Image 1 (tube, one colour):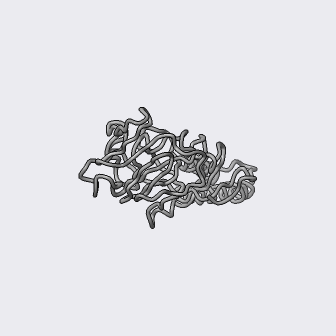
Image 2 (cartoon, helix red, strand yellow; image 1 turned 180 degrees about the vertical axis):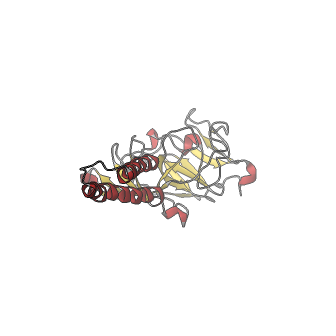
Image 3 (cartoon, one colour; image 1 turned 135 degrees about the vertical axis):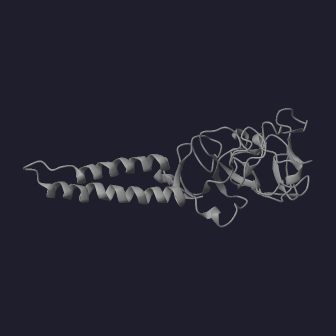
Length: 247
């Protein structure tokens, strides 16, 4: 349930509570029983609903996994707890599994792993991810990526479409900040993050649509000018019960 849906439900119950409280009492009707019903059933729903709305709006909410892009870490139909409060105090760390609005039209948030953070150099070569020139150990992936990639010349270059031919992502289609926002032509710009699914060859991620952002507005791409940010840090699978564990 979305926060606005929960708030709407609470509002409906609150209206019922007001109507029950202030509607005239017919002769022979026991007002005490009606007030008892309000106190015992309606009031707890209202209080619990408001508390739940505050919780899922500002602290923790659930997230349902609809695709295979994070297999084997996350499976289709997994339900997660997402900490919405944590990133108010610090930025995402490399390796975090994060829920965020992508820089392309979508009704839903995406969930991916943070691979590159601001200031990193990054390359994918021969199926291995290199950060600042060092190979990374990634025991969580389903398979090594079958494409090469490098961040250089103020852009993201990949040979996914034409093996062996490195082509830059198009800023009309992907979120690639302008040169003025880069500290170096080969380092991830401030507030930008390179996100990848653990199921590397079946993941709609940064190698296709550019950088996610922790704040501000998307610089370029299909959602240029729209608000960017991170929804929260996925930290626990709680359903199904046999898969319950921290991430």
